[in-house]
Image (cartoon, rainbow, N blue to C red; front, side, top):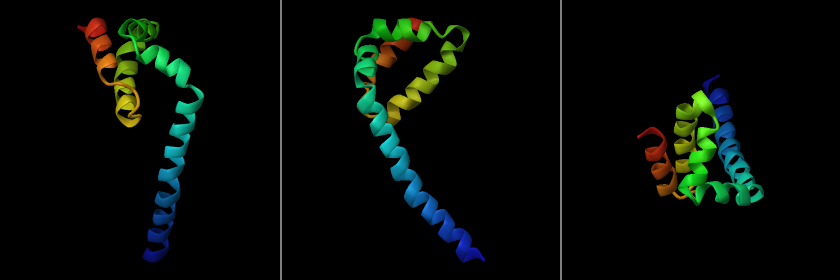
Length: 87
């Protein structure tokens, strides 16, 4: 019985990771213009995150996590904007 469970986990891992990667790449391709407009200027990012209201701190944390996963987003811009927003 252990072999069946292990093989199901292996199949899930072999399919799941590439699928998630492909989805991320497609999102970046389709939304590149909107993403680059927000992430290339600290003021644009600050205005965008500020518009989230009380959820801005949690949203900013999620944004930082996404920035680490999607490597084409420059890291300095969110960090500068975070300094402006949250001190």
